[in-house]
Image (cartoon, rainbow, N blue to C red; front, side):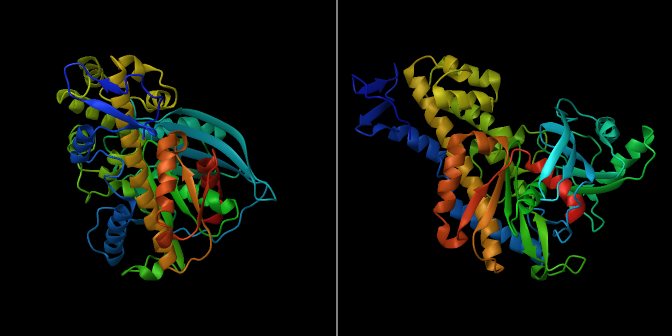
Length: 450
């Protein structure tokens, strides 16, 4: 709820409109008319209760394990961390994320702690304009080549939907996060990068392991001493990973492992009734009909949800023409601008407001959309915790959290934790853990732990 000092007039009015904010001793109370409009569009923070979302995910995953049609890919990774780290051996790490592309060298000490020796960051190929898979893998190889070591170990984090193979290779299903690679589906990530390296003149042996960024975050938690964990990413995209019992699959995944890490690809969930604005964003996205849950909750889309909400409110007389026109022109508010506006009332969004009414309506919309995201992702996370409890995991379960959106957006972070706490009777005790380099560290560890 928005808080600010008592107005001397005890009322704020928007000229030419009956819209107003009422005050009491606790601060501003959202106008019922605005509340009803946002509620009717499923744009309130509690439009999608986290417990309800958890049940939808659980039902979808049950279908996937039974071999029935499900909307989440629910990918078995054929990895369960049964190996051990090798102190002193340097690994080359590649991390292809939704926005950034990173290459690093990592070495583990005798205490199991990782040391990042070198790291370089650039923009993810295909995020600015469409490219071919050959161009993408060629770009990867050019950055990786200077970082290759004598061990030839190359740990690859590829943050896009893939089919994992028992050989620790991954076959691309599709790209997402507005990254466009025209012929990516069906390509083998590890082999394609190795081939591109050899094409550039590399002559040594190459041992690759390919994992998803969410699984990498899970591995990082295990490096920290955890035996089991749920990994959550909310940045440009959204996903969770956790360990599932292999015996729960109608067709048991290949291998003899009792447990296996699952990349749920929860971004794909599409059985939730979407708001009209969510449907509009879907219709204008690069991957229509895919990654529906991600488009409702992740940092790549929250700014657009807010902007489209402002346009809708402008059409219905809740904000000025100036603010409405700015939202139409920008199409998507930058999450950094949203953060500055909510935290200090400054920046581009504040400048777009004509008067105090615009400011307070926009604040309310930003808060409600961020709370909605926090509740959605908490429901997804809770589903992973509930599955682990059902499988007999006791005690405190670490929840490894990664992603600029959930770590930097205070309202999302706070709502996420509050929503998890409201489901303690279902999820049990948990603890939030995070490390700014968890994707790099976890990816490096996967080469040894597997």
